[in-house]
Image (cartoon, rainbow, N blue to C red; front, side, top):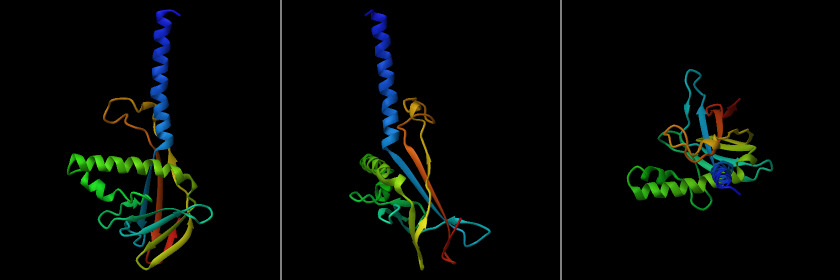
Length: 179
């Protein structure tokens, strides 16, 4: 084999490995954004604070549970072993050790989410005196641009993830979900 062919094959193999890693990472790591909106006031809607959710499969078995925080309404899911990344996220801005802890937590959560997120069919929601059980839902899915993960620009690149979104519209006063 000539030296040029060997170099060309090496470059192709290198590119295949780089792209393969991006594809693999996007298939094995995901981010789930859960937003619970309060639609009790028709003039404005806000993220519900201090709501609890349980995500279930088609048989009603629990896949994951989460809770929205009291400050912003951000929903944090609890990993069965490590819990939520809530504290780690807040420590990440204070020290390098906190940042490392958050990165480890996020990595574990993103891999854990991919194990069950596509099986979610129902949600249970508890907000104050309102409890809704086994409400059918669907989660939106968007794939990352995994082939661009290696680009060293601030707005492009980075490890690719599969993004999932669940938006819940709720009227907690009437204790009902809105479509």
